[in-house]
Length: 517
Image (tube, helix red, strand yellow):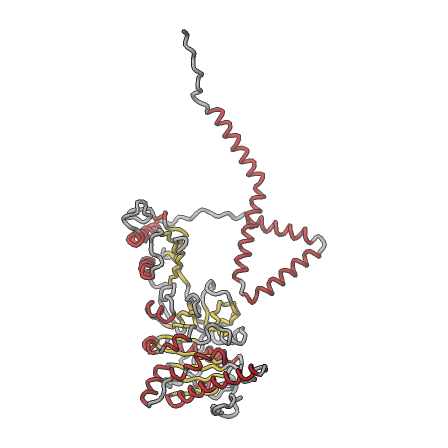
């Protein structure tokens, strides 16, 4: 029986397959060439949409309405113009084509010195980001740093100014102690003498370290563009707040990101606590707050616990009810402030029951500025009198409804002596001067995301309004105008903001009387 030969299987089908691949590749290249303008325009439209969305998110809420109205007016004007829609579409397509031409470039590689520094940072982070049970740990001794480091930049001295670290998911990034150890290590290895910010992305398991420039301390006291009920505590980083205000910085005028504290009946943080080291600028901030309150027609009562004359420039000015120093005058003024708060509440309640608006003096803001209440408490105890914290219970608890705002300034060494009532009602906090991270967290309620600055000029610190984020702060330069050691320009700026002198000294009114005018 003859054998039937099996069909021969071709040993190599490479020629037809190769021709097929060449045809597909040529077709893809041709389609890419033909559709390249469309791809460029689509990429540009996407970039314009992302930029517009980011710009809209960064626009303050009070400016969104006018911005939307102006945009609608411009679109309506283009539609009503001859050939307007056609020209508008052509302009948008041209802008999209120009935007889409920019393609993301390849990641720049560091030089030999930069690679060596990144290698040292990688080896130093291995004990913090590795566990023996991980068979594919990204952080191992002798491993590859390019696997976990990205978005890096260096300064002229070869020190990193920006670094993104991708850490494993099992790292306890919710533990403040673990975070602090990593931040201290990066701070030490990247170079001291600079201020760093650490942004932890817990969802993406990434840590971004950036070097922050020093906040400018050259902005002096001036009339800020605010409405009644708004007080500028100072200035911060551009990405920390959503509002900027025009300020005069020397001979130039620029928009500066401002930390604005809102007071009044609808404020969630009606009272302020300022804590700082001696000479850190707490008195400077209180003077700045007093000048802004007087600018908007408020009544100011200034009380000093130690009587150094830091607020003598305000005495006798229109709108200033008094500047009291020592236990006798300050405690008497606090007793009057408590009775005035009760009187305002009674007057407003009576008017509301009658269906009438509150009297003119009731909604007029009253500011009680108290510097060093613990010193005043010691002096009051020596004279067997009630302390200031007991007298402040009524203004602190009912000040929001009575248009009474309390601002307290204390030092770090004695802040623990403040009672629960003061801590519970002063939800706007400012910490000035150098201090350990633990003390800053105790005062602000949360630790700052930046390392301590190498230099702390007066008025430099951190601020936190309620449950918001902790931001850097530089208080406007508001020195005592009678202090000859202060810069002449800053002294003249404060003198120019002081109200005119009153015709005669008016004592505080008696019980049940209205405020002096």
